[in-house]
View: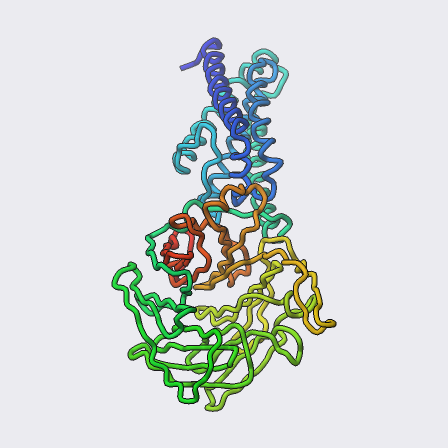
Length: 503
């Protein structure tokens, strides 16, 4: 059945009207809530690096196409432009759903309340509508000017391929921008971590000693021989008193408990000494006492340990390993830490051991760098965090005729806390990236996630305060994140959609 010219014009008019309503509403919505729209783009896995430009460009293009649809002389090209824009939007959704490391929130406008699948169906419907409008309008143009080519296939094909190619290249370039750290940009997937529950532990002197199966153990700096234990549902609490066989009356300065099932260790790097006991009876015997002082301690196995601290003979921080596997203690010191200023403050950081990957991880406090090594302290690689501080901003002051060296000014703290689990490195930072609101820091802490296998930044998430208290320290065990604030032990769950827990 042949459609009359008047009916064709009516159909094209309705199509144009639909697109005008869609684009004007979408553009106005973006502009009225522009700051939120720009922040959402900045957190998108595709538009992060170019959010500043795109946040203006998209609504302006939508308005320009809507205005062009009002003019008969350029209506064909306006509908073609609308078709291209919808192809680009649809390509974006397909990439997000199939190739992105996470699915972000909607970018607002008329589709804000839709899920991504409904969003995709909606876009495809409008692409079909635009396709019909192009064919009908092209026929009208041909009837008015028969000399012009009446085949729109080349135009359609060019716009279709061009739209897909433009978004695909934008995605690839944006990924490259983030991983090259050309901009301090974070990406936030929706709800990768959820709060399970919290428990009031009354005192702010607790620290996380470790986990054994379904039990969490907390040490106490003011009562070093006491351990608080509770299950991972925050029920069945128990207070444990360590029986220490200290025949030589070793004087402790700052002992800490570390859990390494089926053993526990009481360690003081200032002495230095290590006491070892079994979780079944909580009785500890002296395991080692030497002269190699240290400030941080990680357990590789019941007979092998990684240490870090100040080497007084070298005058700088070092990482060492302590090995009892051959019967006698062997201490080997590495040159892993790279001195850039003084070798002490500029190399200060956090020592971690990733048992899943069997890797030692060291995260610097004052620069955007971490390093990994094997258990013999042979360097694997040096990684960069997304922050832009590559050089510690350290200014030194000297006292007692230069004999005492101290900080003249507190440098910018790039990484505050860190944890490792599975293939991931988690770092806590209060430094805001581009398009991030300062208001969030009042209610949450920022955790950045890195893939130690791929040597890449994955995404970030907010670790929300509990009962008005910030999480000061945290550890990750499997899919559970354990956080400590001043007075609360808080459990969070890592979502499988965002974390590959098994690898």
